[in-house]
Image 1 (cartoon, each protein chain N blue to C red):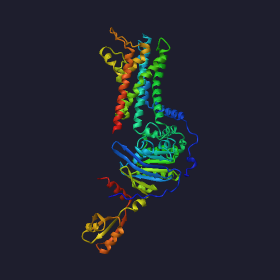
Image 2 (cartoon, chains in turn purple, green):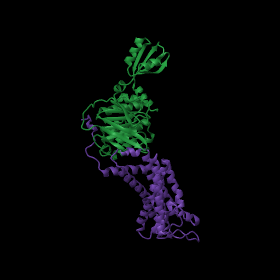
Image 3 (cartoon, rainbow over the protein chains, first blue to last red):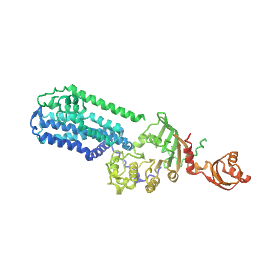
Length: 272
Length: 309
C-alpha cells in the first residue's frame, strides 16, 4: 500500500528479549566503566587505599578475628567501592530518565521492566567490580582469612550491604535532579564512610554515634564472617561488640529511610 | 466570536486502518484538561502539521499517540494497533523534543545503543547516512550543536524504518540553515511514503511542508484542512481611501468591523467582502479598494487572540 522502498524495510528476523536486554546492559556497562570519575572512585581509589593502608602497613600480618588485618582493610575498601558504585549507577540512571533518555528508550522494544532489570544488572556489575579487584589485590598481597568460605561470604555480604545505597543515590537524584547532585552524594560517602567506622577504627562517643550511620551497617555486616561484630580494640578500651540483630536493624532502617525519601521526592515530582 | 466549521478533506487513499485514529480522546492532569475531546483521523502517507500556541495540547496528544501517556478517556489507535505495541514493534516512532541524549556517547554509539534495544533495526551505517551524520559518527554528543543533536534524534527515529513518524517541534533551537537542511531531509522521508505528523508553532513550516494542518487550541481541534481551506472560509480584510463620515457606523451597518486606520485609510474585516465592497462603491464613501484573503498568520493570530478571555 505504501511506497516504502526495499532498503527501508527492516530485517525480517527480530531480536529476542534476551538479546535486547544484554545489548542494553553491555552498552550501559561500557558507558559507566568509561566514565573516569566514576571508575576512579569505584575501583582505583579502594584498590589504592587498600595497598596503602592494608597491604603495606606495619600491622598487615597481625591476626584479627578469623583473618588478618590486611583482610580487614580489604573488606572495608570493597564496601567503600561497592556502595559508591551503587550510588553512582542508580543516581545517574534516575538523572538520565529525568533528562528524557527514558523517553528515548520508551520508543524502543525495551520495556520499562527490562530497563529496570538492565540498570539493576549494571549496578550489580559495577559493585562486583571493586569487590573482585580489591579481593584479587588482597589475595596477592597477603590478605588472609582462616577459612576459604569467608572469601565468597564476605564478598556476598559486601554486595548485600551495598543494596540500600541504590536507594540513597536514587533519593539524591530525585531530590536535586542533576548529575552534580549524584556526584555530591557519592562524594559524601567518604564522610559517611569515616562516620561508619570504615576507614579508621573509631572509639568512645564517636563510635556510639557511628553505630547509627548508614555505612556502619554495611561495613559491619561485610566484616561479620571475620569479626562477628567485634571492633578493633584501641588502647585500653575494648568497645562492646555489635549484635547481628543490631547490624541488620541498621541496614533495614536505612533502607526504609532512603525508600521513604525516594517515595516523597517522587510524589513531589508527580504532584506538580 | 464562534469557531468556524472545520473544513476537512477527503482521505487521499483508502486503507484498511488509518495511520492514526483518535476518538474523543481526553487527558486531564488534575483540573487541567490538556487534551479535551480530540477526534482525528490521519491516513497513511499524509503529512500533517499540528499547529497551535503553547499549551494547546499538542505535546500531550503526541504523548498519547506514542503510548507514553494513557488517555483519561477515549480511544486512539496507531496503524490499527494500540500505541504501545505500534511503537514497540518499531512501526511508529518520534523525534522527541529537547533532551533524551547521553552526552558521554558518540553519535554512532548512540545509534548502536538504541539499535540494541529494538526488535529489528536497520543497519547503523544506513541510518547515519540518511540522517547526514556519517561525517559526525565519531563525534561525542556533548560537543554536537543543537542542529546536529536534532539530526541524531532523527536518526534514532528512523532506526526501524517506521511507517509513521511524529516530530515534536523538530526545528526548535535550530538556525535557519539547519532548519532548511532538516526539512530537505524530511521531504525525502515523506517521498518514501512515510506518514509524518509534526507539531510546530512555525506557520511557514506548517504551510510549506504539510498536506493538511490541524489547528489546536485549549486541548481541542479548532479547525483542520489545507492552507487554502483554512484561509478560504475566514474573514477578508478590506482597506480603502475613505471619503465618508463615520467609518465605524458604516461598518456596523454592513456587518463589518474596523480593525485599524492609517492616514485616513480604514481597514475593515468582514465575512462578506463582496457585499461590503459593493456598498462602499455604490454609496461613494470610499475608493481605491484593496481586498486581501486572510493569511495563515491571520488564522493563527485569530486563534491565539481568542485565548485572552
